[in-house]
Amino acid sequence: MTLLKMTRRIALAAAAASFAFATPSFADQVVDKIHFLIPGGAGGGWDGTARGTGEALTKAGLVGSASYENMSGGGGGKAIGYLIENADSNHGTLMVNSTPIIIRSLTGVFPQNFRDLTLVAGTIGDYAALVVGKDSDINSMSDLLSAYKADASKVAIGGGSVPGGMDHLVAAMVMEAAGEDPVAVKYIAYDAGGKAMAGLLSGEIQALSTGFSEAVALAEAGEVKIIGVTSDERVDAYKDAPTMKEQGIDTTFVNWRGFFAAPGLPAAQLASYQEAITKMYDTAEWEEVRARNGWVNIHNSGDEFKSFLENQEQVIGDLMKKLGFL
Image (cartoon, rainbow, N blue to C red; front, side, top):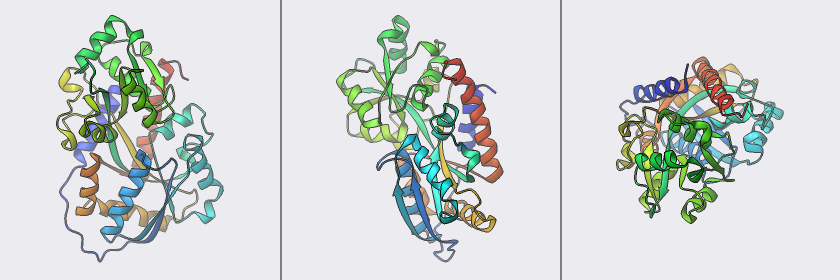
């Protein structure tokens, strides 16, 4: 399966997962408490997903209480290792993760992969976006492609992940879909999204590859212009942002985020976590969190989650080989 087919499938799954929500009864508590383990710092996508999910679950009455722990280090590997090494004492813990668990396992950033954990559920997706500074002469993907065709070496695209990381792969995927050589992308890696944004605003890079939900806040503040989103249709959270597809670039991509538990989690406890997350989608509390962040619902549990991850591992691995990272 090509990357384009795979990303189209993801987008279709996201659209199919959207449905009406109802007011909760506050009488259906499924889990007493959940401790959320976050493999990165405060304010990032993992942090927002864990805290937003905990907020919806507790406010809807599906979970009695939620606590949160940020554990940065090793590209997420520190938290994964901790969860595995302390499995018996972490049965009340859910760790959030996303596409990078695939990428960083493939590249050997950490030795574990998703198969070493208990798969709970894929939960949401966040589209990717390319943005430029507010004063940039680039106002569309057409402008960016024109500059790229003229001299790709002068069009630096930055991101908050390492070369071969997700932000780089998204930029390469977009250029490939536009008929350009993805290997020629001049990618500048930054330690984090904030540093990447500083590089964009200083003119060090011409465009930034980032998550759509992170770009929305900056666009609303007037700091950047979003020139392309990897969604099928414009996203309600920021309708001014054009899609890649409407600009003639036939590609879509969603960075999934979901939850994992320690290996050896009892089946009954796993079932309770999955039940709580499934019921969450029918609540107004969840819809408020989802809409606020511009997320899309991508829900898959257990074996479906495993199949999804195995497919993504294959497709991303193929692209990384093409780019010379594997």
